[in-house]
Amino acid sequence: MASQTGSWKVGKVSLPPRVALEISWKSIQVRFGRAMITAAGTCLGIAFLVSVWTNIAIMHGAGVEMEPDEEMRNNWLVIMSLLVAAVGISNSMFMAVTERYREIGTMKCLGAVDRFVVELFLIESGMLGGVGAIIGGVGGFLILMLVSLFKRQAGDFFGMDWGYMGTHFLYAVGIGILISVLAAALPAARAAKLPPAAALRTDV
Amino acid sequence: MAAEAARESQFEDYVVRTRKLTKIYAMGDQTLRALDSVDLDIKRGEYISIMGPSGSGKSTLFNMVGGLDKPSEGTVFINETDMAQLDAAELAWIRCRTVGYIFQAFNLIPVMTALENITLPMVFAGLSTDEQLQRGRALLERVGLGDRLHHRPSELSGGQQQRVAIARALANDPDIILADEPTANLDLRTGKEIIELLREMNKERGVTVISATHDLHMIDISDRVVWVRDGAIEKIEARSDVELTVGQVDWEQESGTAAVAESAKKE
Image (cartoon, rainbow over all chains, first blue to last red; front, side, top):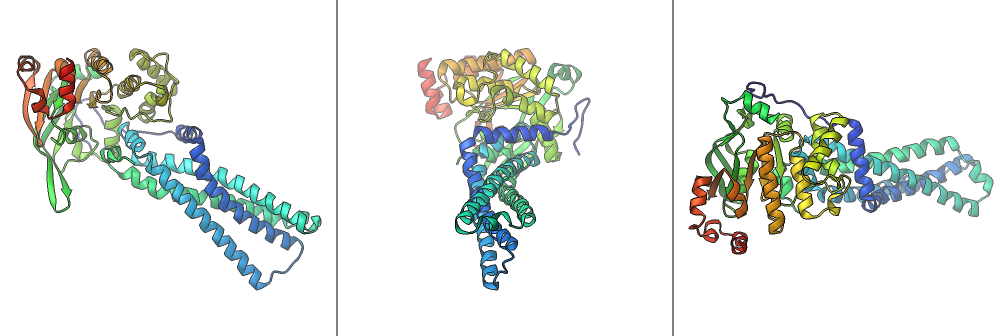
């Protein structure tokens, strides 16, 4: 514990959640172009994922039994789409954190503890992941809708298993946010751990 | 608050004390003693310049005193508190409330406006929103930027950015302002204005200013000048001594930098 003399005491710093949200939101707004590129990674991966799941929902609705082969191919597509999203998002997040070392060092000089820095990056990446996943999810769904309206009977599409579709859409958005947050956590934690002097020295 | 603390604690005359402060960097097989057993006492309310060539250990000393890096051996006392005994959260509190930092490259947060940059340390300190805005506005007005509250750093000149940085350093009424080459990125006239502003703050608020610098103007107004060389303190001069020697000292040789030679020429 701190040794204390007279009236001088060492206390605790704080970052209210509302302010953390505001700072993260502002950070996205100001770097909008950069943020959208980061979100695009999530967007593409999740669009792919949702389109695969939409297809499955349509087949469920039409009562089509999937061949084991086809089911395996679908699973493979789902895994691939997740990998695409994970790699794209990790890369963008890594860059986004690295180019802000000086900002991180400065924040720590102003009294931020490691946790604040990590928090800000996680909120930011979570928001980006959420927006990217929702846009990607809707996009993937609409594209498959168009394709199936041309290629199949309209009834097939509208008679899809909506329950399956709904839950899987939510899964997809959740997965998008989760991957974004995980991808940002590692570089952010690493950057936050640096002593401020080292973070300020780092030029990228 | 700083003045109050000063009155209450006249017995603890020193706001910063370093004892056998040593920093060793490992560079491959070799080790470099960037700072070698430095003892330095700084009185409350002093205006100190730290001079020395690049690589002299000046910045290392600066970082240790500000709690931005950990010493290898020895310790720094700030307000009689041993920094080595503090955990990460307590160190953060010291950086937030007790020390204000000013950098060569200004280091404002680019996505925030001038006012937001200044209120950020107040957020960490737990001040209410009203207090933050009130104090933030007052500080910006004090440094002459009352009409630039909502400008981002990219919309401000270098001198204006450094003024914001000074206001930010004062946000939580610190005991110490640490300035690392605050005028190095500014033209002569703006640099002089910044130095004068720092000196005014030092007198007005009783805040101790410790500045690493090459700038002759800075030396002119310092209470004491600490000369650092090869990781050790070469000499400490009071202002009266400096005034006597300024005419005789070969600045270029003393500081080993072109910057000083250049500013000396323009004198």
